[in-house]
Image (cartoon, rainbow, N blue to C red; front, side, top):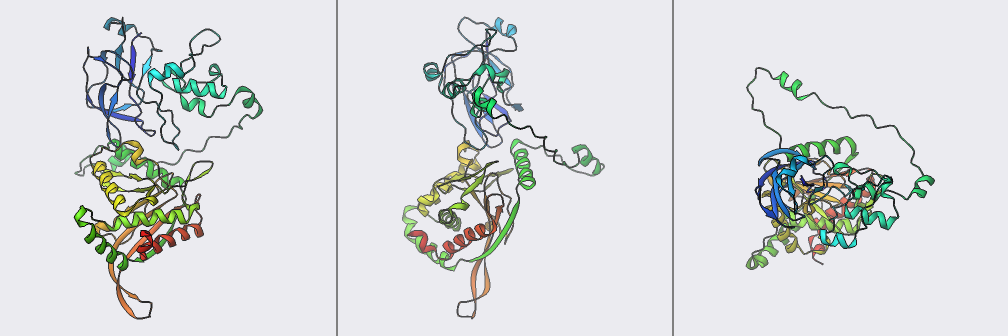
Length: 437
């Protein structure tokens, strides 16, 4: 029976995408690993590969089609012995193929399924139901089920055409364990109140001259995530002012020495390093909210907001506490460039425990940033400005002062813990030599 090629989930949060360009045409022969199409997600344009060999029998979705739901058939692959005449006879439970499955829980990075050749060697054979019908399950799901002693005939699949995927078996228990501890049913949570409908808003401006701007995938995702954050994350805010004169002096000295290597450190590079070291000094704050638990990370994985046309990315600098200022600077420049070109891979902008949003470069003196779930906190950085201050000797003087606001998830970090984290960040930036030790 012909195989349906489905719209892949190219990231754990992807729900739909745009089929930007077909790289094959009907009648082309393809092998595993051949590029089939370019697909635009809410964050990037990515290439989609074939997972099996065969002939492209039919392209079901036209180039440029927007809003194509994940797991929607986009093409039909004919295997050996099949012809285009078989396409019309394909029934609903036809075989399906997609490069990536939505098998990973949202709190964890996506886990790649085994390649077809390795799956054939390691995955248990496909089980059958009591009636003799084949139970459709991914190779990864079958392997996990075998390791956990699960009966796949007792598990309902959430994948395409009822296929059992990793998410279905990851939290499942053997029958005996299920009978011993059945979960208590709870009433569904009430729906969150929504704003006026699009038609109602448009009616308010009837007769006025306006332009309607269609939302792309990135804008919809940003709107959904920020709404979720403000509705579900109990924010509180801690504010401090930081004197930057020592940092600015050290930065000028380092840049003079690094100029022959083509390296120029920014204030933001020092902020990233300061936050990374602070998370090590206050490890209880290096944490994320995971629904029914808190995950405390050992490395400092710091996300940095990068503005792009139509939205923003938050690429993550992993193990930032271990890297030199020059290494952080080079990595941040590379991530920012590829973010603006929408060339980041999902693993490069997902994860992290802490984020930095710097609007000081745009002249903003201070602001409050919205936490990016599941992060525990985000630091909003304002501009460094010359201000009159009282020196240690009690005399009035002038200093370069930067205002920062730490937005904190109270479920993860309490007030005193958040204050301790911010104190460490301030100390690192006001005494920048300690970051070079």
